[in-house]
Image (cartoon, rainbow, N blue to C red; front, side, top):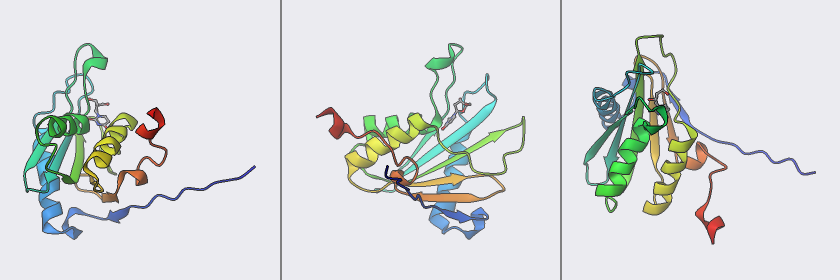
Length: 161
Ligand code: THU
């Protein structure tokens, strides 16, 4: 038997104020993106903002549906928009934030497995690491450089060969 250990790494900032201005601005864009969240069922609003190499910002927010599985997370709404409209303009960074009136969020919301797999796909496609900023409003910010730090056992398309 061989026991393997995998380390993942991320940087924690205690508040938004500690970040570079460009990262602060991107987190503010994720907050703006949350405005268009359609979340009448969970009442959990999620916003995602992508910063592209050209400087363009793309917003995504969670879009729920009365037929529950038909809804989609904020991250994938933003990333699929990118894939469909700006595939040649690499994503430098992505900020994600959330808010609910139901309880207080004290740490950043971490993206679901399906969103991580989609991030991994596009990171590979663009051939450049994707930085992810997980932002808790009035709380800490976690910055992750590269999706393998979020999903070490991601599914590789080479396996389809
Ligand atoms: N949600 C996201 O938008 N991103 C995630 O990574 C996890 C969850 C949304 C889906 C649903 O609209 C609500 O949060 C509650 O699960």
